Length: 348
Length: 230
Image (cartoon, rainbow over all chains, first blue to last red; front, side):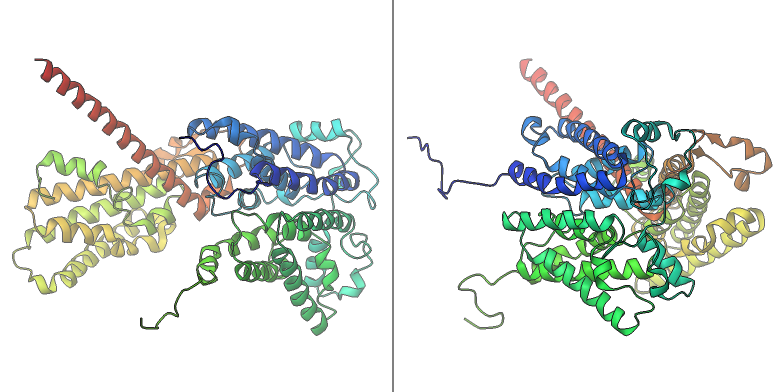
């Protein structure tokens, strides 16, 4: 006797890994387009390199681990990891940085831990952390936004820079890069200047960091669409932004000459990318609502601490990785009571 | 450990019960000083000498040690030996001693040493215990040097840099530049690189074991079919 319908539940499944991942890619697109528009073609070179090599390493690992290549290679998870990694890299980096990042993300952080669904740490962020601590120089040369810096590299010129490290004649590296807004504020405040005297610098935009505020806004839009499509739940992004706004707001109110206002923190660096796309990774985030709320609040707090008192360009990656360590604990202690379960010490 | 033939002691120390790869003892110095091959060699040899000496002493006085107070006795013996080795290193390999720093006196706390005293030397004959100390120490040293070499190649692009610190002036030319014009992967030198490197080495050992086991099984089954045909 055969049962063509299979077993329960008999509800048409609307979400496969592929569909979820492709929706995420779509949601990333507006941010990527704006990023290229505002910061030049370098980011596209990085994205193509990370995606190509992430797929290559994924294919190799699937072969080595004897897994079905056809189902897993294009399920989109490697592409999303690659895109997230590519978006966190500075726009002008030598070609081996994205390649090494893709290797570490896919081979070490994903497959050595057991593949999709088993990885303890967010692969893109683990790879970014490795790159940042290994190559601090290359990883902190950020392109200046084109609004403040008209000179830029064309597509071919950025590819050429990526592979040969040579810039077109007459163009200096210093003309293309600048301190990011977060770096600028940390340096200047460290020198004892008040925030309101440095806010005139052209690294500041209308509400956040010049250029990056628009990229952040695009990621915010894409993220909201993901929440609307029920791909991600609201808990993590909302709590992350709330906790970051709360702590930065408190510091801003206590001493406005030392700390920049919360709005700037929300619209600079990788805040929105982190809140909607990185911290919400279904594998490495907690599964319970309460767990997610605690997790996201912790990330927001850590982002602020690392940004203000740390020495790195931004705090999102380390915050996500560090709080990611607590996820098994959060899942354990926030698991909802099973229906009919007795209180712990009640005797039967 | 019932089989105390010399061959088995050698095999246990170098492979089946390797203190670094199987027992996972003494990981603190293993991870901390294995940033270059020579650092690894220096600490490995110091640990090996300690192991041989403590195993010799413990084994030779094993009949006089009361079971109840054996642990404090072991600790005193190990502490004396390590103090002597520390002073010797400070006198003869002072630069290396400075690089290894706190990890030389910390050999005292290396669990592998008290582990061997408790598990082997206190129960076995003098010569066997000496051999056990030597082989366990050698297995530990080999892993330290391999891990150090891997991390050094990835981190600095060289092997055996600063060899002169340990082996004298002539060894300065031992340093081999494997990757020239290499800016270095800082990750390999930092602590996470040590953990990942050790993990890869353990995985390799398990893989080799598994391949060997599969080969043995197939050989045995072939033997069985051969016999049954006869």
